[in-house]
Amino acid sequence: MNDLDERWPQERFRRLRQSADPGIDKVVAEYMRAQPPGRDALELVKEVVAELGAAKRAARDPDAEPPATKIFDALDFSKELPEWGNDRELLARGQAVFADYGLYQSAALFFACLPMAYAEVSSAKVLAGVSNLASHALTRRVAETGQMLVDVMGLKASDSLQPGGPGHTTAIGLRILHSFVRALVDERYGDTWDTERFGPPVNQELLLATLFDFSVVTWEAMETMGVVLTREERAANLYTWSVFGHLMGIEVCREGPLTLDDVEPVSARLGRLLESSEEGRLLMSVMLREMEAFMPLGWRKMPRSLVHWIFRDAPYGAHRVPELLAVPAPAWWFTALFAVARAAHRASWLAGPLDGVIRWLVRKAGRHIVVAMIDRYSDGQAAFRIPDELARAWRIRQSRAAVKARAIRRNVRTRLRAPARGRKGPHSDSPT
Image 1 (tube, rainbow, N blue to C red):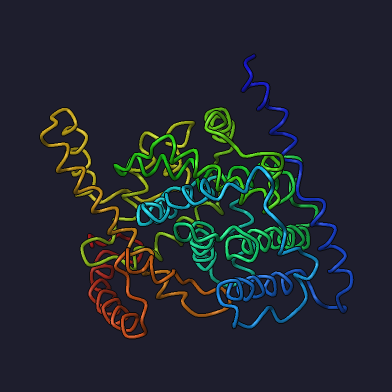
Image 2 (image 1 turned 180 degrees about the vertical axis):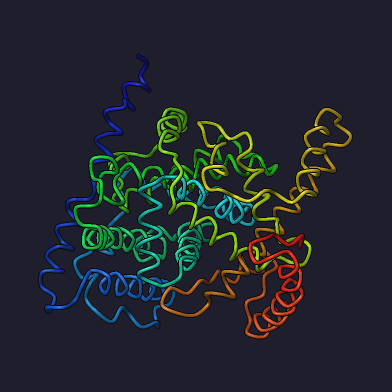
C-alpha cells in the first residue's frame, strides 16, 4: 500500500459518508427548538436562503440592508482564514482561473459539474426534493449555484474570501443552510431515508465530491473544450477551493489544503458513487429544458450535445453520466463536428482551426447560459448577478432594456419552435 492509499483508504470514505457537521447541527437544532410552535424546517430553509442573499448583498455594499432576522447570529462572519489558507497571492491566482476562463467554467458548471451531482443518488434526492419544496423551481437552485461560483471566485485579487467578503459570507452561510437542509430531509423523509446507504444528507463525502466537481471536474471539462490549465493554475485553484471548503465545514480541509497528489485517489473513490435515479433523471431533464429554451434558433440541442461530448472519454466511470441521467441524443451536426475534430488531430494543419471553432461554440454556450440565469433570476430572494467587470469581459448586458430585448427574442423563438413540436408530437425533439 502506497502513501496515497494510506491517506485515502476505503474506510475513510465510509466514515466521511456517515459524518455531517455536528457543531453547526447543534446550533441549528437549538435554534429550531426556540421557534414558536407551527414553524417547520421548510419555512426556516426559505428564511435562510433569503438571509444568505441579504448577507451577500451587505458584503458587496456597506449601504445595503443587513439580514432582517437572527438565524445567522450564531455564526461568526468575522472568522479568520486558517493560517495555512491566508496566502493572498495564491488565492488571487486560484480565483484568476475563473476570471480568465469564466465562460468555459460556466459551461463546465452546467454541462459537467451539475450532471455529476445529479448522478450521485443521495445528492439528487436532496436537490430534487428540497430545492423544489423550498423554491417551487428546480432551476432556481442552479442559479444559486452559479451565483456561489461568482461570489467565491469573483474577480482577480478581489479578496472575496477574506472576512466580510462575499465568498467568505457565502461559505459560512452555506454551512448553516446545509444544516437546515439536513433538518428538512429528516422532517420530510423520516425513517424512510436510508442512512446506512446514503449517510446523513449533505454528508462529508458528498461535500468532498462537490468540492471536486467545482475544481477537478471543471478542469477536465475545460480540457475537453480545448483549455488546458497549467499545473500551477490547477494547484492554485484547488488551494482556493480548499480554503472555501474549510470555511464551509468540509472535514478534509480542516487542517490543510488538498493538493494535486490527492486528485487521482479521491477521484477514483468518488467515481464509485455514480448511479442512476429517478430524481437525477428529473433534475437533468428540467435543467436541459430550461437551458435549451434560451438557445438561439438552430442551436437548441447544443446543451445536451455538450453533455455527451464532455463525458465521452471521462475517467473514473464518469463516461456513464449521460446514460445514467438519460440525456437525449446529441444534435447530428454536433456529432459530425466532433467526429471531424477528433480526426483532425491526426492532421495538425486542421487541428488548430477546428479547436478554435469548438472553443467558440463553448464560449457561446457559456454566454447564453449566464444570460439565461440573469434574465430568469435577476430578481427575488436569491438574485443572480455578476460583477460589471465580468459582464464587460463576457460581453453580457444586464440593463433592463437588454433583458427586455432578450425576452422579446425568446418569445419569438418559442412561437417559431411551437409548430415544429406540434407536428412531431408533444414528446418529440424539434431539429432546432
